[in-house]
Image (cartoon, rainbow, N blue to C red; front, side, top):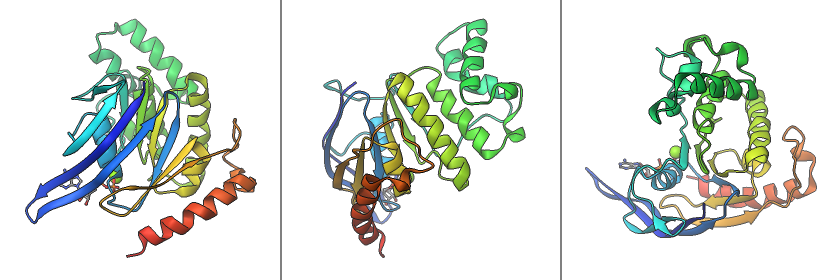
Length: 254
Ligand SMILES: Nc1ncnc2c1ncn2[C@@H]1O[C@H](COP(=O)(O)OP(=O)(O)O)[C@@H](O)[C@H]1O
Ligand SMILES: [Mg+2]
C-alpha cells in the first residue's frame, strides 16, 4: 500500500482556543518501507498516526492509501498503541486472537494461528496466562502479536517500547526487525529514542516542536540484517546520529 500525506494539517479546538498540532505535512511512504518518526513530546506524532489509522480527520489536506482518502478504520492498517490494552479477563491466546474472532475466523484456526505467532515471539509457554501474570515486555510482545496476527499491510506503532527497560527494548527491536524482514509490511514507528529510530529504519523523519513539521527526512544507508545490540559501532550510524541529534536537541530545548 502506498501512503500519501498531502498538505495535511490538524487543529484541535479546545477550551483555550485552537491548538495547531500539525502544520501542513507532506510525505510519501512506499510499500514495505520501515519509517521511524522522532520529535519532541507534543509535536503531533500520535496525531499523525491517528490520521493514518482513520481515527481522526485532517483539518486540511488529504491522507491517501493507494490514492483514496482514508476515511475510518481500514483492516489493512494495524495500530499498535503505547499502552498494551490487553483485556485482563482474557488469556494471552484469546487476547492475541481477538482480531481474528472479530473477523469471524473459527475457533480451531484462531487457536492455531495464535499458537504459531506466540511461538514466533517466544511466548509459546504462556498462551493460557492472563496479562497480570506476564512481565511488561511479555505483554508488549502480546500487544504487537495482536496486530501482526491478521497481517495488515501497514503497521502503525506509537512508542511501542517506550515503558520498557533498555535491555528488553533491544531484544524487542531485534525481534521486530526479524519479523519485518520475513513479511515486509510497511511500518511507521514513532519513538522518542533517536538510537532506536536509526537502528530500525530505512528512513528517519525528524519533526519540529508543535505545530509539527518534517524538519529532516534521512535515508539510513546501513545494511540489513542489522545487529541492534552493536549498531553504535557502525560509522554510518554515528554520522546520522550526530547530525540528527543537533537538530533534535534544539527542538526539545524549552
Ligand atoms: N484530542 C485532542 N484534543 C485536543 N488537543 C489534542 C488532542 N490530541 C492531541 N492534542 C494536542 O495536539 C498536540 C500534539 O499531540 P500529540 O500528537 O499527542 O503529540 P506527540 O504524540 O508528538 O507527543 C498537543 O499539543 C496536544 O495537546
Ligand atoms: Mg504521542
